[in-house]
Length: 250
Image (cartoon, rainbow, N blue to C red):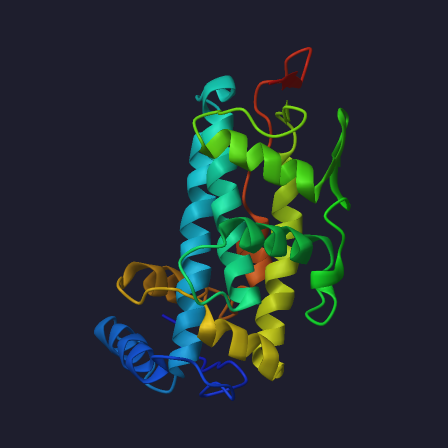
């Protein structure tokens, strides 16, 4: 596990966060239980937890998209999982303190992928195209519609049915890697992202996500620490079977 002590900018939120003292104690306890550096702020541990959840989610997407999988079957579950990882990012960016508002969280996460500047990302229009493949360009709204379709048992959605382009996901790892790197950097130097993270409704109930982060970013053989962009940038979501048509409707 990493010897290097890194922390987010704030030890405690500057704004009132209901239940913070209880939350703070639980994050500290989880960190102690896995042998984490006692110098980590509880809010830092919460950030580790979020990155660990995302790492687990996005690794699961990679498993679903492996060579031996039939992607016409696994692609929609993989996309739904991917969107869950973007949703938790948006929850933390917004400081969403309640257990609902998932669509707004998802939209915030996609906006961050489109323009990862904390003071401006929320102004990105939902019509903004953020990914393109040989089949077309896709906006935030279209990506959200596809998530709803994939997640809710492929139910009908308002308006036009989503285009299921099997090449969308392979474009995402570089965007995820760079945007998460910027988010982590902002957490280390700016108070506002830290205040929002403290408010975000993330339950401190498991050790594993913290362990995943501490282990995943630990010192390697060359004594260097991996950057977030390196870890998430290694995700392989390429389309393994390349049919004549790489997309389908409905």
